[in-house]
Amino acid sequence: MKDRLLPYLACPNCRGEISLAEVSVKEDQEIMEGSLACAGCAQNFPIVNGVPRFASMAEVGEEKAEIAERFGWEWKNFTQRDDKYAEQLLGWLNPVRPEFFRDKVVLDAGCGKGRHSTLAADWGAREVIGIDLSDAVEVAFLASRDRANIHIVQADICKLPFKRTFDYAFSVGVLDHVPDPLAGFQSIASKIVPGGHMSVWVYGAENNGWITRFVDPVRTRFTSRISPRMLFHLSKIPTLALYLATKLIYGPIRKIGGPDAARRLFYGQYLSSLSQFGWREQHVIVFDHLVAPTAHYVSRPRFEEWWQCVGVRDAVIGFHNQNSWRGLGKINNFPEGA
Ligand SMILES: C[S@@+](CC[C@H](N)C(=O)[O-])C[C@H]1O[C@@H](n2cnc3c(N)ncnc32)[C@H](O)[C@@H]1O
Ligand SMILES: [Zn+2]
Image (cartoon, rainbow, N blue to C red; front, side):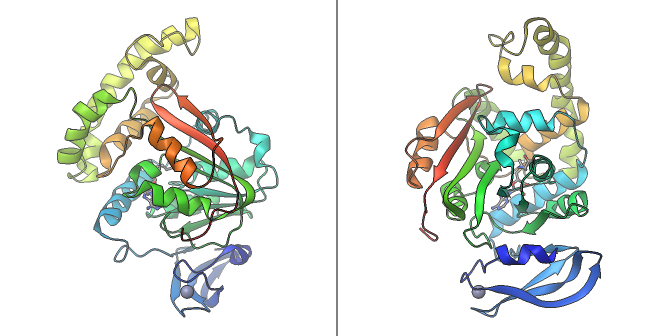
């Protein structure tokens, strides 16, 4: 943890001031081991392996702890970076462009291995804070420790340890895995400065009927219960089918006719976009769909309702790859703890 994170922090329990209580190991600019203390409720928060820890798995509840454990495994074992991440992220955040990040204090809410936190910093953000509930924070920390303006924090999206401090927050593929997604949505909104912006991307209910009907029962009863290592190997079977379909059918059609050419085929737009990725990336996408015990597929009316619940009536909402919702909204003082 870098000292310059401190002014942004606030106690997730009482919103009290947070200060450094102890530094036992420091390496260059990073406090690797130590602790933080809240002036309000006197609670201590450890800093372990360079990451301040505001969420304890013993306290977040069984469901969230399970979700965190499984995603932690995912990102510790799929640490690769891909050149296509930037374009992919811009698809999820559209109409936000790289220039939008310039000089902003940015929250990456549910940062996983931190691939998007680094992009946000590359695009000129003043400070980027990536939070995640899982041990993926350790991967994100290692990937960004040499970047002075990237900070990684372990926290629950529903109990963020920050002041109202962000010019822009984005959350990609996270609220679908939070037991109460609206609570997470509102929590993010409550940390945005008046007039700041928020982007959210989640799986859609629309066009995903085949997943909710056929894949979900397998996920809830089987793949989210077996060990992540076993799932890692088993998921190579559907990945092989995906890989062959995208490389032999969707990819060539995309090359000849452009991104919209495969639109009429089964799951066309999405599979066409996946055709750009290699085996490893397709494997993590399949694994990611099967690993979590909780996955919400959100309908457009429900997604619109979330925005309305934080006072946004004119969110820019788009149907991405014909299977997911992305939204961008301007937030005006949504109250904390609402
Ligand atoms: C599908 S991954 C997406 C990660 C990242 N946004 C990306 O696109 O690379 C979902 C992430 O949400 C995190 N997550 C799930 N529940 C969370 C919670 N309650 N608070 C914070 N993070 C959470 C998981 O640990 C996981 O890293
Ligand atoms: Zn406190």
